[in-house]
Length: 188
Image 1 (cartoon, rainbow, N blue to C red):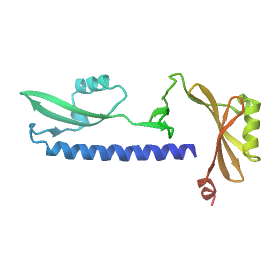
Image 2: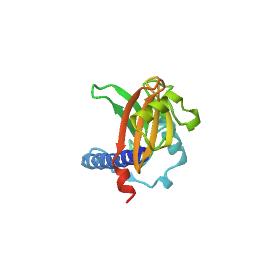
Image 3: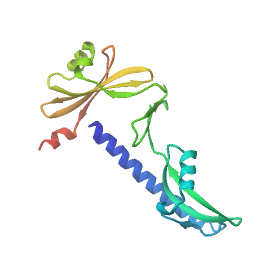
Image 4: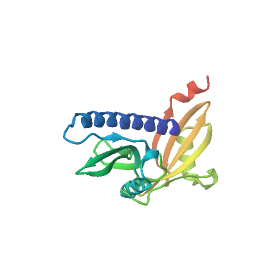
């Protein structure tokens, strides 16, 4: 469920990026004040240009490079994108910022991180709370996450072919229980 959600987020992000680039290209084509820009293949861009662009925007990805002449000087316009997933509460509080395609996360607490945890390393009160929230079945996966300085265990559980995701704090409080509606259909 978590993987399918991340895949969906990445797909939507890619569509938004492509749409944004299409709008940008349409606006650029309408601008007749500059000399004609020439789009060039990334393989034809000088290494120093790529190196300088990547140094200027270290977490960006080059998507388009155009060669142009400005005041008689040959310059390269490098278009770069950076995609993030941002979780925001209905009150406008940013809970989590995660770069798409990267395992690094940036929360409002820079020390926040997410990691897989062995079942034997999960506190008993966390397991008890998850089992009370969703009785029966088998725990398939546990991730330990830190959100706003609070440790959260994300437990994926299978009960008769139905997947559940249970978020439990380190002190055993259930924060969220979510049923994966797709899991029943996957078994057919």
